[in-house]
Length: 374
Image (tube, rainbow, N blue to C red; front, side):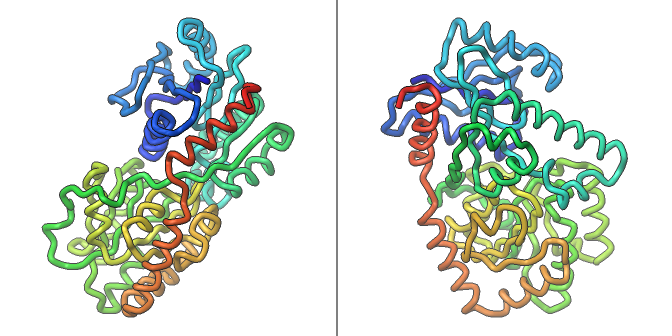
């Protein structure tokens, strides 16, 4: 069986890691399947996959919607696949090839996330358009793979057609092997640190994290706050920097920007505590799973898919409350017993997560049911 994975060329970091990890796992796993990644446009960087093909589609997302089917059909005539997995919000359906939609986001379907992503009229219109586009993709898809039961439920609640088509839930695996070690970009600092890893979008609640961290500093805890992730929203990044300055935290909050994967392992290993304040995640976050794998005690948002994915391995807080976030950090950092217990629970949770080979086997099995190759 040949599995095609259709992907947009500028897929987010987490989505890119997911596709690379999955396609490589399919090549390693004991399954009767091979994989080709179909990149719908010119990719800005080399993909680390066994096999990839760029599909010549100009015009960004609009071009992929208008001309993508024709361009993909031409490519598949020369290099056919038995099933096509569409990662993300876009689905290109091709005659006689079962189409699986694999959503990578739930934010456009969550009111709590939308209140932060769409406070202005242009933003509201942009996200409303995205939501309608997702609905069109849902209608085009023959079946679905979801990364959490939470995501399947919210898609089914928003788009009734989801309930009438085959679907399955496949949890992701961790993105960074625990043995990965590079140079810690925060190692030049002498103080211990709290770690957050996230691209800087409003729904990631980094502003609230900084406000909560100000309470930690007031409480006399010596830890810095280290934030790794690209300043994806320039206006939001400016707001974060201003918040740091307003609280006199310029020497205590460190923005690292993008950190290469081989250095993330060391960054995790040398942190004291991991905090994930995001209000919206498709299946918790790779960062949470990675923190478990690196033995970190974790504090996490109590919303979205986090309770399903983290279960009892973390201490939860309301991400809309900087005060609650700050109190949680203070209490945990001042209690070595609690830190050790959270680290232990995280390791137990990590040991129950699937491997990428297991994910690949589940994907191949579901794809086979869609092609009739059970």
